[in-house]
Length: 207
Ligand SMILES: Cc1ncc(COP(=O)(O)O)c(C=O)c1O
Figure 1 (cartoon, rainbow, N blue to C red):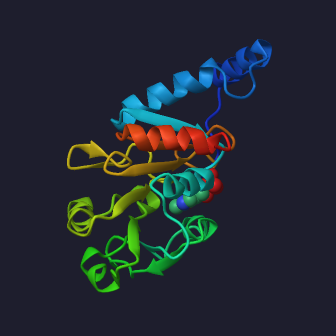
Figure 2: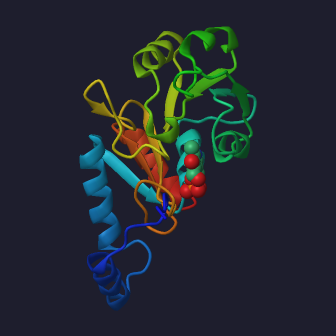
């Protein structure tokens, strides 16, 4: 029997949790800061902001650049429901673009026909750890002045053209137990943009 999603938790993880329990710092303590810095360095971004789930990461990553009511966000229909729900949580409308049958990821040349004056962001998903066609996606965002939010909840460590996913736009990661790495429940936002990082930290803490 080969288990495909059992978390690999050994003595060093158990000892690390014991240290945190003994410290009494069970929420935003020094270990969270240490984790944020290590994760940012691993992904190759200046900032990483820890949150309590991948869904919260997506929600905040959309709120931080100002996505809200009346806006449209282009995304893929083939994902966990959290991707589209996070757009709805902001009062915006998810607009679906079909996938490439070879990669299961959003097909860039179908994005153009869905762009309207209300489109504010692209939200591609690096599904099953497979990076999207970032060359085309970054180009479309530049041409149409769109925010780029990457759902990298299943793609920790996946690389594209020498960079890690989550470093092209605002990256969103999940640490749910079935993911590539876990904290039990948890998530992370990654970005190189100082304003977005500050805004995300504020929203994480109820503004
Ligand atoms: C593609 C994708 N997006 C978002 C999420 C949401 O992450 P979480 O379960 O940590 O809220 C998940 C995982 O469940 C996911 O697989």
